[in-house]
Amino acid sequence: MKKNISLFLLTSILLVSCNTNSVPVTNSGKLKVVATTTIVADVVSQVGGDLVDVQTLLPIGTDPHSFDPTPQDIAKVADADIVFANGAGLEAFIQHLLSSADAEGKIVEVSEGIVLLAPPEAEGKEQAQNAGDPHTWTDPNNVMLWVQNIESALSSADPSNAEIYASNAAAYDAQLKELDVWIREQIDQIPAENRKIVTDHRLLGYYVEEYGLEQVGAIVPGYSSLSEPSAQELAEIEDAIRALDVKAIFVGNTVNPSLGERIAEDTGTQLISFYTGSLSASDGDAATYLDYLRYNTTVFVNALK
Image (cartoon, rainbow, N blue to C red; front, top):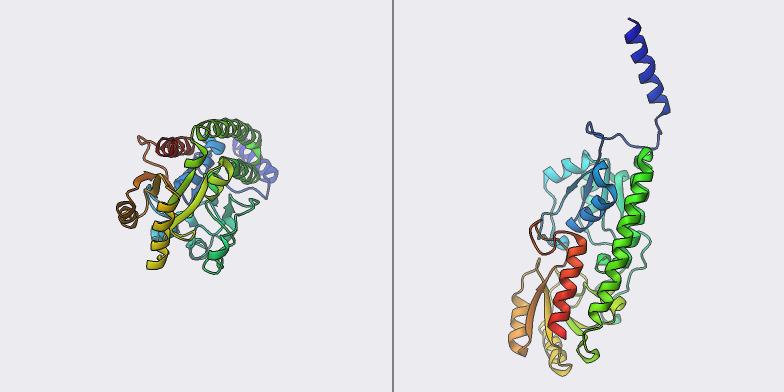
């Protein structure tokens, strides 16, 4: 009897002392977290470490612009403590998904606070529905802000482990800063006259602005890979490639390369595949976000220098 009373008192004290702003953790003691993309999931895992159980909505190799959630995805989100998304308009499906899962209060957009790049003036009308360029992760300096947003959200949900989240965030931030320096050193190898790039759609805006490259065009002249270029737009990009002596056309590995292949053949330009909205499998070239940027930078440098 005394043992039961003691257990009751201990349970009562623990319940009273709980922070009402925090969320419950799983039976394993971990926060249940859902991330939209593999890139978001990896950064969340770096900050959360062993304290979070991270599930990813988009399978490896999936284009974020075209993803369509399943009923299983809705259930996964409904069961999560926190849902981390890139935000900035990347996940067109997110509001419907959150509403279906009754989970709108769980969302954390990791790109919150980043000043988004506006679309080129010629594309402003087409892109009017977007606040700006959603591909914030292509610059690791933006992901440093992701880290702050993720740390804040995890610490608010699980305040007893706030110091661990802060320590993890600081360690990962240091790695991002080292990577930033390395990228600059690599890009310096490319002659200034060769730093012109063409991609399948406009997704490298933050990267090219930060590291001194020039986006002279895109096969799909917009921020979404789902847009359809006109015959005139395709002719214009081919003319630009010839006139500017562009060395390579870079096509993301999550999109259909057929248009890129056609333009490469028409212009005699090499077609290069790189990682865009998804990491690789764990045994691939871009298993983590840091690997992703190292791989892509190496691809750019080798093709342009």
